[in-house]
Image (tube, rainbow, N blue to C red; front, top):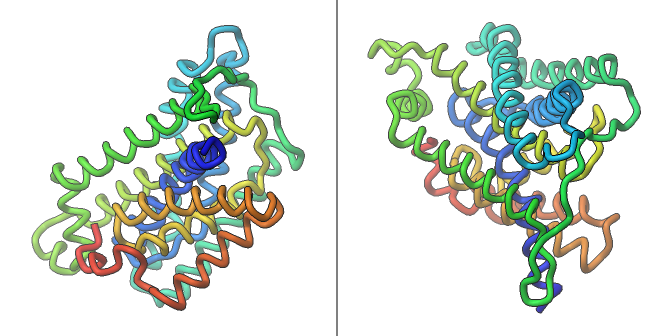
Length: 300
């Protein structure tokens, strides 16, 4: 029982990171039908921006702890969100009417630009996060769950809840859902489509940056290639839940995190990527629309 609970707890933390990144994938796909393969690099950029802010603001000072990372988290989300809007305006907006292959190749180019740009700025070596989180926690059915794990899951859940309320209850959220259904009709109705698309990129980039900052603090190190694999896994999570569906992205991320953790326990850490991508192949073969695929027609 203790192993099961420990696996569930560890999987929830990893799954929360996957869910936050998968939300960006699914929002962008829902609104402009783009598989934004640069999205994982926004997660990496968020980790490095958080690293820089913590270094400048003295995140390693005694007492910084979770409160310090909360302040840095918000600043990082805003900064990377603005960068995400800039990427949409410069790299994707001119190609919105071009064939999908063109914009897909552009996304790969943006990914390489972000990776190599980060390597130039922060170096190719691993950087140690300037924040030491506590390992204190509680014992539950024989498993140890740290307060940091609980805090990260709660923060992720609040971010996802906030997004859910924004999409379903705000005017801009309604505009996003409308554009996902029919962009041309929205333009004829007077909706500023490009402004809403830019806002979508801001939100998606912010969530990925939040996940990056939390992951950097949780794992303790960051590297310019850290967004590549996790970006593919977040894409897997989006497909698992049903790409284009926001609840599906949340569910897919959590399920993938727990399955990967269980696979690591059963087969060893070197097999965790095999488990994740085997799951992607199975989904594409058996149920390409994902778990909540029937609701994709509503997109957001």
